[in-house]
Amino acid sequence: MPLTPEILTANSEVVARLRSLDVSFEPDEEPWFTIDGVESPRHIGSDGSGSAFVLLPSQNVLYVSSEGRAGIIAESFDALIQLVVARPYWRDILKFSGGGDLAEMRRAADALEARLQDEDDVSEAREQIRGALALADADDPVGALYEAVAASDAIVRATDGSPFTTLFNRFSIDNSPTLRNAAA
Image 1 (tube, one colour):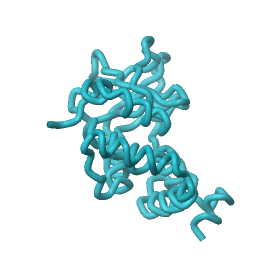
Image 2 (image 1 turned 90 degrees about the horizontal axis):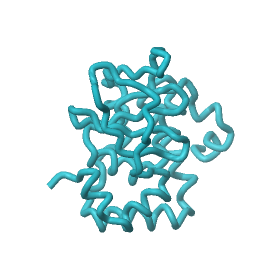
Image 3 (image 1 turned 90 degrees about the vertical axis):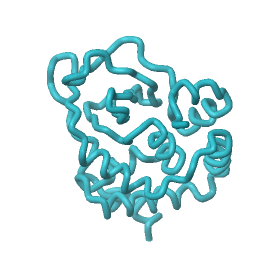
Image 4 (image 1 turned 60 degrees about the vertical axis):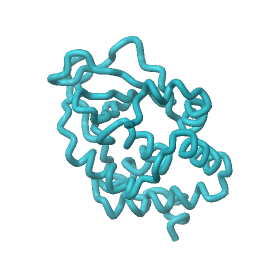
């Protein structure tokens, strides 16, 4: 049985653990963007920055950042949870993607993961979430994230009608001394 927002939110322990990974399944009440071709977007959650997760009619998960960026990040709700658990710093992978370069994204993921090696809370949260949901490990979460964002065709607009930009950012880990040193 595929994982759904309803199944997930029924498990308060998992919801609490996901909050520690910066995901909340309490949707926004007031719409602050529109999606071309989607009448009533299904807001399923948010993160600490006020950005939104939207489950599209295709079952893809769209991420709409509070900073004017948007794109599909997962092919399903199940894939979203696998991504968040495997790579809780997925937003930073996109930030340091070198404009959408998969090799740069993998470098960023390795550097970010190296910084988490001593974070027992994250490791514990990962284990508990996977166990409680019988969630399989994602085969290639960085590759899946890249594919989803690269193929994203959703057009998201601010309330003034201006379109949001891609989730791929132009930075690489070479722009961050901390990440550059972690990768070394």
